[in-house]
Image 1 (cartoon, rainbow, N blue to C red):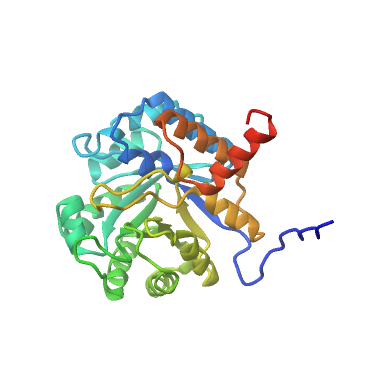
Image 2 (image 1 turned 60 degrees about the vertical axis):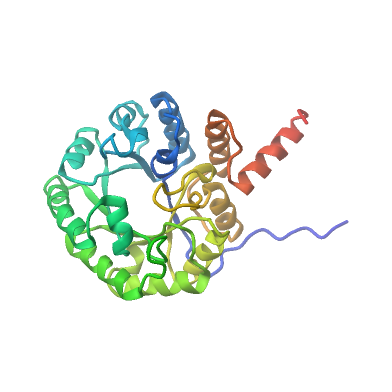
Length: 318
């Protein structure tokens, strides 16, 4: 008989618990060309809530002119079944967006800028400094209403327009978001060009300006490096990551950039390492299969697709 595989034991060199921020309903679906009915978005969020996520990026209150897919955000936020212990966040580019998010009952608002001047101008039509100035009013309103504020730094590892992004540029932006009062800051590899050593270097640079325990990694899998980058960040103590169910997403301003790393793949990795997440992987796989079926294409999660295929075979349908 083959030797029995030992059960996974926690690695003392890695975090014992990792927080996963599920971004599929917002960052993932916003890139879909075909408008998705609000009821489908609600069903997806409800499935993810039931799976045990403590953080779900559920909506975006940007102009429908720029992101038509998110025009139904208010309706979606009103219809979801809110799970106690789950924080539902919304992207808010300005004070008008903040007020809409507040009215919709968002638990957290997210402001976003870039470590690349070129990307900032292409993405939000202003300089980095101008974007930070715009967010000052949002940050003040969040404090006034005692609402959690999260900052996101795009193109921290590379830019589709200017190429390399200096570590000093990342540090400067993180410092500015810190000064606005952000409770947490996401460091994003928007175009998926990072490799493990670079991932560590950028995160450690950001940690010089902001508490490492409140930094999160947001990796895209364009070059197939996202899981390796996450492991590298685990090694230096990062214990929060963003991922998207079924690997949904991309970036409309970064040609060729594929979606966020798939949540199912991240969970498979973490659980295999003996790291707790509080999330039910089976339910996440089912949520990924649900939204992929609606979109009419296979999901991008290797673990999710493999598990779903195995379940199908075990049920006798294959």
